[in-house]
Length: 65
Figure 1 (tube, rainbow, N blue to C red):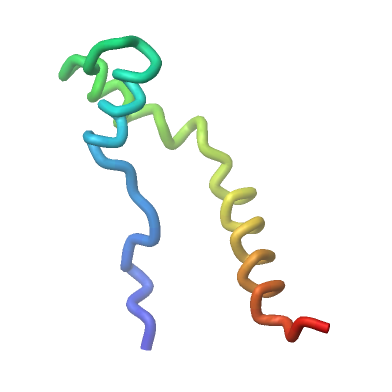
Figure 2: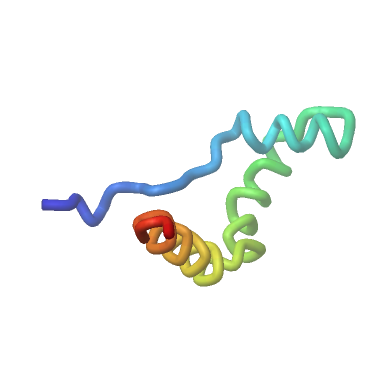
C-alpha cells in the first residue's frame, strides 16, 4: 500500500541559500527566507509539473520499438 501522505518533492533552506548566493552574491536573511517559504509555492505550476512527470513515467514504461 502506498503512503499517500509521503512527500514527493521538497526544497530545503540549503537549496534556497544556494540560489541566493548564485543570484545575489549573498545568503538570504531570515526575513527573506520566511517570505520565500510563504511565497515559493505560488510560483510553481504544480499541475503542469505533475502532468509532465506523469507523461514521462508513462512513456518510459512503453516498450521501445
